Image (tube, rainbow, N blue to C red; front, side, top):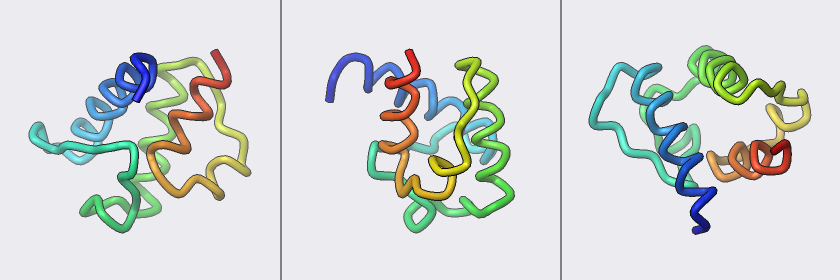
Length: 81
């Protein structure tokens, strides 16, 4: 994992902890709706909104629907920088 990916993962971990109200929640590049308890369509909207606000970006609808893991979100964020 690159330093940039680590930094983004740390940022997203903070957002996940806030959204899920769990200060001990750990996520990885491979985290997804199947392995993060409570990650459903409503929490997905809040996660995306907070990530977009943090980075000043907008996820295209294709990225939202096609992303299968945190890795896909981080890859998109890095491509926009």
